[in-house]
Length: 238
Image (spheres, helix red, strand yellow):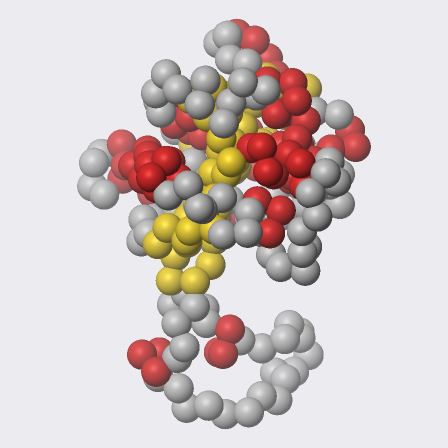
């Protein structure tokens, strides 16, 4: 098996309670991630890492491999890399790559995964590929520190959007990385500079720029947006 695809879904969400098992068109949100992962091909091994009772029952009924995630991996302070190490040790020792799939993102595009995997296959000097999108109107140069009493003072820039320094952000869709070095870093066998974001996944990471519609559900508003988008997906309007 080449890729271990780990679908992460835990119950302890503060933004939107039980967001992974909320329903969109009679399916749990996480079902879309599961079906997406299962569609990626014979070289992809899907496993669901969860502490959600309803999801465990779903996996049992549909013969989907799962891991009952330990409580210490389900807290607000838990690191996603620890959950991935747990999955690799239990289900992915024969895999070369690991793909992280969040259970609260129902909008899925197989071509992004395949393009990411192909890039790693063809570029052995890269350790990981992460999907990114350009930042538009929510640019940091236009943001203020949160304050419900008064708008904080900020130096006027007069920047038009086109004049702003281009930024990109991880859209949550795809993160695929080589297992061997990641695992050694997590186990303390390889030193690395953890000052840098995503450095646990590699020293050289390819940003895969996309403009697909990605809805990362973390609030009631996100869920309502996702419902409308998924309806359009079903009607093939997108």
